[in-house]
Length: 108
Image 1 (cartoon, helix red, strand yellow):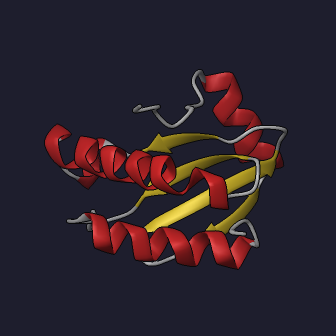
Image 2 (cartoon, one colour; image 1 turned 90 degrees about the vertical axis):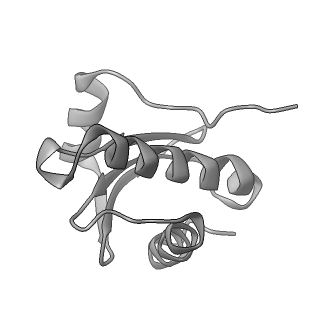
């Protein structure tokens, strides 16, 4: 059965993570995270990074990565920030996400 990746919502939650979190950067995605009892993600992109179609595609690809790999990721609340140029396909997103999570020590 399909179960979506748990998501963070609300500006207060994002601000708390930005303020208290640890930062890890890669070429096209940055991650800010805090350890938590459960896994949840938030994704932030700005209009300057492309149209709605491109931004939403990046969000879908990141959510799909977490859906497929949630058993291997330590419990964390993480916000992902897209950078220019936005990513094109799942393989590229997957490689960068693995690098970010391994840098942070969050991938089992």
